[in-house]
Length: 99
Image 1 (cartoon, rainbow, N blue to C red):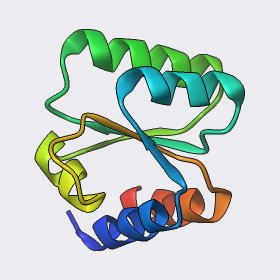
Image 2: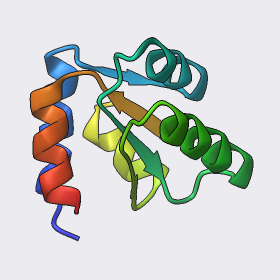
Image 3: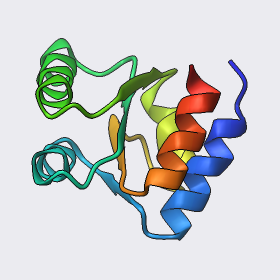
Image 4: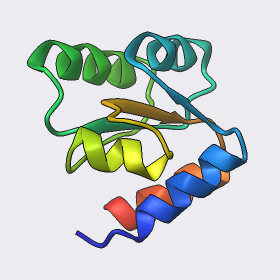
């Protein structure tokens, strides 16, 4: 997979347009603020199902990325299982890269 998306996620984080953590991501999806959810492929089955169901219900695109360490590194933190992108521009760019 082309890893240019990592720098876009990093830019979005520096612009304060990302939220991490399962409960906070779900809260943003419910509020209609999340434009895209990135989910680590090594997340637990329960977490994957919960996030996929929420995103499907609220019509938010969700994409699976390699692993929690790569996702954490993209935002400059430790391992992260889920990240919500809150900006339409960043979300569109990431969708074009990840599809």
